[in-house]
Length: 446
Image (cartoon, rainbow, N blue to C red):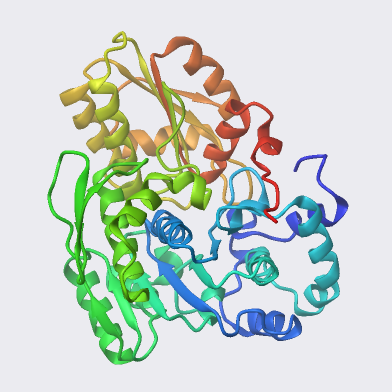
């Protein structure tokens, strides 16, 4: 916790959070968030709301939709989680975070309400996001689901459009033992008679999601991304085709996220937002949404990505390895710094990484395992063991901290990837960006 934060923000940050406190901080259900919103005078009423759920891709998709909306002239609030450098990242209006002074004052104004309701950290920051959106006059709210869907606090909102990006094997001890169970929980953010954008699910996950969506009575749209390899590329929604699209975080999985965001945008606008505006919104994604930690090249040789499960790891590292292979820099060592929370299962990730490295960067990749803190944290030795058990058979070393690993990696490697838990990404960004957390605090727009 940064010493410079005010006492009020420190009290907010001290509330139990799932990522660091574990299941004790997890409070499924909507009663507490309903009590908070009622006590705050229902800032969420009469807003245009889009809910975005998914195992992977929901943060990127939500950020893309928010950026497109802002580019189209709609004042847009965006809630995502977790934050990387400071809590204000969770709540942005047209890409602008609240000042620490605003957050401290607003938290103090409602602290007695929080004391009575006893929300989780996620519920408290969600309510504060809504207060920021209302204070700034945001007409459209794009809200990322935190965990699951049906019982997530964000599902209290009456969404005009729902989006489900993907279903994977994550948090299954909480959401159900099968992919079908997970899909049903996530699809339950749909609303009767409202459109729902469904990502490219397969097999039992798709069948279960569609069954749930039919039971709810929603209008399902399943856009299909074209298999283009070059850039710029084309996106085709149920309403039109937009060519010449360029993404600042281009990769196959991000093109799917872009399609889902554009499909949702097209459902919200009649007439449709002009193509030039759409392309501008995608190109200025970081500026208009504040997105960080996804294919985040903090300099020309170092990439940070919040890729906390097997599917996300493969997607992020595929992009990183492809970029390295195309580089005309020297063919020196490539360091992959990874750290995870203890409840993450890596599946066959190590086998995939070993095979990919052998095909594209033979003999160049060294893995650095780092520890993570908190009740769900995992020591470096356990991360090393998990990587080996998942099939990694190449060089591997362990470090107690991200800083220790980076000191080694950046001095000895031609390229460095840092990923896994958001705690690892946050530590890396704090260490790599001049000024640390303070450099990410943006002014309040008048």
